[in-house]
Length: 309
Image 1 (cartoon, rainbow, N blue to C red):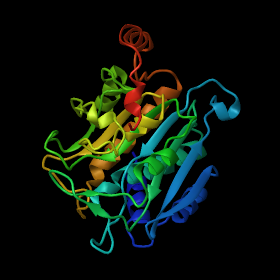
Image 2: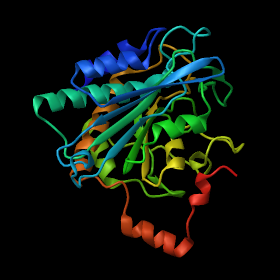
Image 3: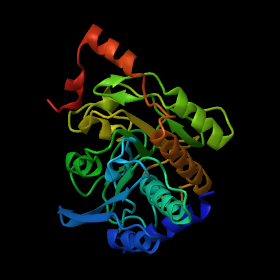
């Protein structure tokens, strides 16, 4: 159960002075030493990028061979002050990452250390801009999206879960969370059966898949429509990337306050942790390596889709 960590993450983020240093102190208090904070300023505001590294028993940090999972909390900002007071819907990615880090830290303290390393990243800004988007307004980023993604994607990540609020659409009418098909180097691959199983186990329900398009896996800034930024980490990595989308039955603006659902978010946190457990032991594959190789052999590289023309 991760409800206490989820509530703690809400408390850390839901105030006008929320910062990376607050998160670092909370994680240090939980026994996590591998926390890096970098403040980036742009357009008279700032955001604090956070990177949390949790070593596994047989991970790269201990010269082991267990793979490293990356978990990216993708968002524009956790608050839209002064236009809106309170935690915005868009903050879910940051909440999930911080709650998962707190839980994994507690597990490690008690002796439940995962096999592989886990690298978690997100950013904190309580004063992000609101931007126009159809069908409802979104949260913008205090820094350019390419800058943001470059700080969130770590080269050591061998597979990526990108967690993002995805309520501002008419595509998926489901309250809870959904996962996307795997994206790798411009290819939208079939949805991982292992991850569908883990979603079933953590929700007790039939898994839900968020449909994505070619537009969604191309970089922002190319003047084409994107559902949201959930798949942007895939544009700066060769690692397989799966979106974890916090969803709703009706379209909810990313700048709406009072819209985050703690129990849905807690369920997503548990899913992230279960994936981390299974991935480090080789029991959760994001894609079929042979099938991907066959696609590339037949149709060539699609990595040009990862670049802004």
